[in-house]
Image (cartoon, rainbow, N blue to C red; front, side, top):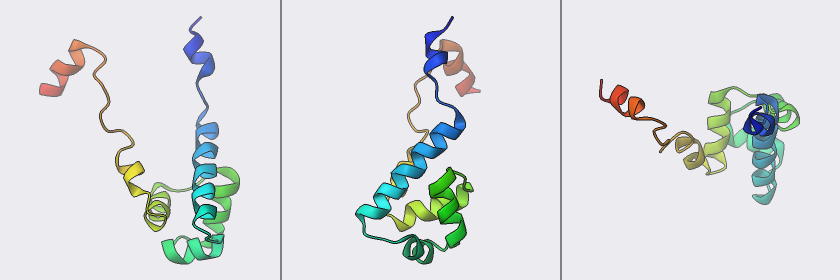
Length: 94
C-alpha cells in the first residue's frame, strides 16, 4: 500500500488550512471580517463562510488575497512544477 496516499489531505482539509491562513493574515493586519469584506469587495457572508468552512469561489479568494497583499502566493501556486517523466517533457513540446 502506498503510504503517501494515506498521508494525503482531503480537499476539505486543504480548504480549511487555506482559510485559517487567510484568517491569521487578516488578524495580523488588524482587519475585521467587515473591513476585509469592504476592502476586497467580497460579501461579508462569503468572508464568514470561508473562514468557517473553507468554502469560497476562486474569484472571491483572489479578491481577498489582493486585499491582504498576498496575491503572489496565488500567482505562484502551480508554478515550477517539475516534470515527472521524459514523456512529460516530450508532450510539453507538442
